[in-house]
Amino acid sequence: MRHVPLGQTDTISEIMLGTMTYGTQTPEDDAHRQMDMAVDAGVTWVDTAHLYPVNPISSETLGLTEQIVGRWLAKGNSGKMRVATKHLGAGGYLPGGQITAETIATCIDDSLTRLRAETIDLYQLHWPNRGSFHFRQNWTYRPKGGRDAILQNMADCMGALEDASASGKIRAFGLSNESTWGMDQWLTLASGDDGGDGPARPVSIQNEYSLLCRLADTDLAELMAYEQVTMLAFSPLATGLLTGKYQNGALPDGSRRAINGNLGGRWSDRVEGAVALYLDLAAEHGVDPVHMALAWLQTRPFACSAILGATTTAQLEHALKAQDMTLSDELVTAIDDANRSYPLPY
Image 1 (cartoon, one colour):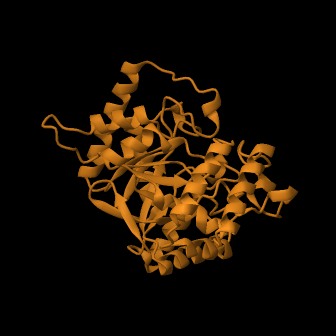
Image 2 (tube, rainbow, N blue to C red):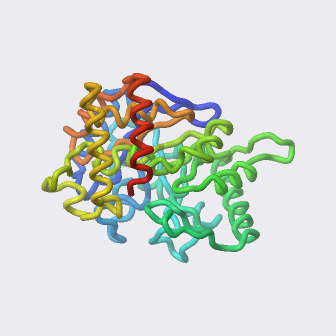
């Protein structure tokens, strides 16, 4: 499997394993089979979070997915995949509603316990304290909060992350659901007085990114390319829309849309038309639409790894066949033309 840069000095497989359904839609034995399958296919990273599992999110299940991953690691699998996890963000369930230096220290220790690990390879903040335009909030987004207070909180959190790095509890730091301005501030804070980079310089940004969600293609793309920040693309198949399984009124039993009817605001008549166009392009070029969507990420001008989450091992097995695939220039151009016809369809 191809590897792409992770930050300035590390690498990551072009596909990393997503785990957000482990413990709800995906039982633990299936989850462990998926992890074994991913290792066999050459996947070198697994992504999880304190918030998981989802579908539904529940305070009663917080941390369950980390525990499932931890039990797999404890079965002699430590070192077979590196682990990325996330601090509960201001999006919910965080006592006091804010990420602070104190919550970072506590949450890292708690995640290490659940993961049965001594070190977290990549520690991410799930949501910015100041809010985010992600998850369809871009349509009404307005920045909020005082700049000085925001920057002071970031500086305090950076200190806690540097302490965690110095103690060996985390190896690298990344953001999630973050903006270009926010990432630029974190990069600035991570620079020392001598102009060098500190131990908690962000290496990645985990945002939604797919053929149907190309919010990152303008100013964020430039930052990622020039500052060597890697995109960890979640929902690269647009929560299953790009598989075509929901077309023409279909609603498969046990699917995400069967549980969450509008797919978190993604489903509409407009998105169905956009999906149809991409499905037609894949058929015209003799490419599986799932493989096209994943391989397209490797055409971007910045380093990108797809977070591939699958409810079943069969879905994962099929999607992993996208590894090492290269799309023709003609198809990439046709995809860009399709994006002009359906920009931000959800």
